Length: 318
Image (spheres, rainbow, N blue to C red):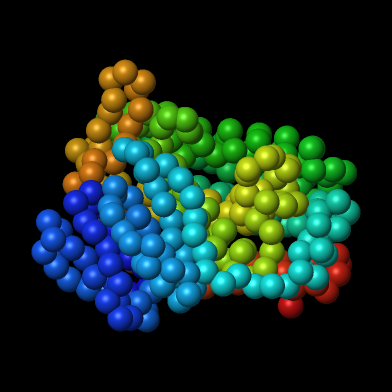
């Protein structure tokens, strides 16, 4: 199983041996064994005993807390973390060295290559917007040719921003106008596509933070994203090459009508859009099916960076 999603406000969680027991109105509804679990995602306003958190921590099961209608990030609980202090020391040193630009360049280049490949595939399928897609592909390709020539991270960010503008203009054309997706809008998302992108990016960010902390790196100290109080900059870094995978996943969900406009609700006061509560279960199952095939790649991304940090700034592979 690996993952447990809890999204009911009337539940109470207790520990029963090596399992989590679920109660509703003092009546036991079932149990989930702890053995297969690696992560628990709590979205509902549930009740739980501290013994539940203790047991999850002891078994090294991470917990993601989400809140609100848009399932915004609230916090993460981890169990035993790696105690590799030397690795973190090297991470801090190299975040202030030329190594940072090497890592940042690699992350951006791989992300843009995936963006280009996805749009190329779409250009073959969508003859109605092929001209617009080809224009974006050509822009991104020209930017890719410049990525390895940048003297500093600031100029690299400028290039990446230009590529993102071209990419999202093309990406938005892939969706039917009825979804109202015209550009990437984050806070708050204003349409079903943006709402889903933000939510899946949140899940991916949590997965990456978990891998980073369990391996012994510091999620706050990145190489591409600048240090910002409270932001897990390293997780933001390592998410970058996988954003195109999320985009593809979200596109396929709407294309195959596994999620539709009717699964979302829009607030009239602030124009924000979010997934309906009754549709969350559907998404959790779809995400979990997709993520099971991705998690080994996410874990290897963190391990690869850790090896590069430990081996030296010129070590670009195993």
